[in-house]
Each structure stands twice: as C-alpha cells, then as structure tokens.
Image (cartoon, rainbow, N blue to C red; front, side, top):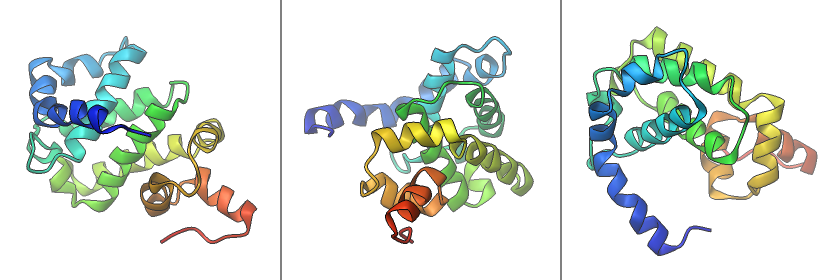
Length: 168
C-alpha cells in the first residue's frame, strides 16, 4: 500500500515527465534495437505519467513523438519478462489509449488501435496474467477499474473461477 509520503514524492514527476522525455530525446533512444530493459521500463513510467497528467505537465497529446514512442515501447515490452510495475504501467497506457480520441494521444485512429491491440496482446499473455494475479488482489481498485475497463484476462479469468461477473 502506498504511503502519503511516497505519493508526495511521486507527484512532482507528473510535472516533469514530458520535459524529461523531450530533453532525453526519448523518441531516439526507445526506437533503437538495442533499447535495454531499464530504458523500456523508464519509458513505460514516463508514458503512464504523461497519459494521466492532464493539467500537470506535458501530455501525450502535446508530445510530438508520442505515436513513435508508444509504438516502440509496446514493441519492446513484448520481449520483456513480466513484472507488476511493467504490467500496471502498460495497463494504464492501454486504458488511456482506449478511452481517449486518437488525436488526444498523438495518433491517427488506425495507429492508436494498432498500438492498443499490441499492449492488450502483451497484457493478456498467460505469463503476464499470472504475474498480475499473483501480485494484485482481484478486488483492488486497479482490478475493478483499469483491468475491468480493458477486460484483462488476469482478472476476468479470476472472476470466472470465483463465479462472479467482471465489474463494468
């Protein structure tokens, strides 16, 4: 469970995530075939923050290389070993893509849908689903909201096994 001090430490990142992505030339680094796990993880955190920082910093809508970075991140993510932080970041990004108009995430409709499907394919892989089920309670806020909106298998299968319906 997150403590108030930990949440306070995370809050300033929302203001600076876009500046970090721009200053670090993230769009150049993440499109490299040699992008390592640390770079992919940091990119996921920055994208998740930028997806959910309306009014607090640079959003995906106003980040010119958003579509390139999203596509490259989704591609690299598919070769990574699942972890809880990777799962949650990818789900937050996918949830944002699913809920927003394409221009609000810096993409065309076709590109947004293709990237969203890529994220969902990774999130719904059995190894990723097992990781999420092992580390997140099926009655958590995440499962009841983000995972339910995306119909993520990690939680829809768990609910089916328990004989309950997924939250809408």
